[in-house]
Image (cartoon, rainbow, N blue to C red; front, top):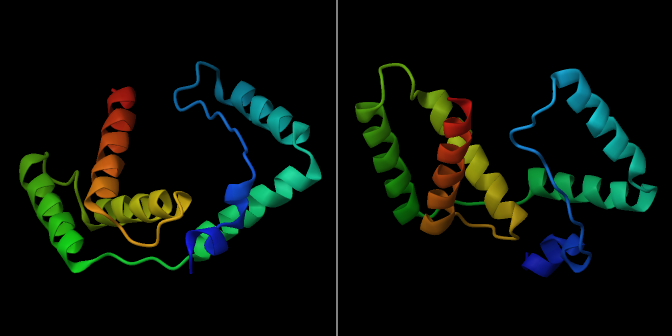
Length: 130
């Protein structure tokens, strides 16, 4: 698949802002999301659904050299983080984030740069939790 064939939605610009660290209580956040969805017209909502479906079903691979770096990163994280905090489930989560990030950029192969971007984003997220 070419990226233009794989993600036909790239021709349309959709701007979306998602609050990662909302200052609202959960109920208020739910109401806010409901109002956002209510403001989307049917065509835009359909494009969003198509995009998410393509991202979920898109072809994706991890090259051998990147796979080795992923393995090294995982081993290092298990050795340096408190016991039990980095598990096989953590690795699965990281790999899924990497897959979705790549596919959201129209890429079908994980690169070292995308892998590093996943961990930068994840570090930002976990820092916000503390």
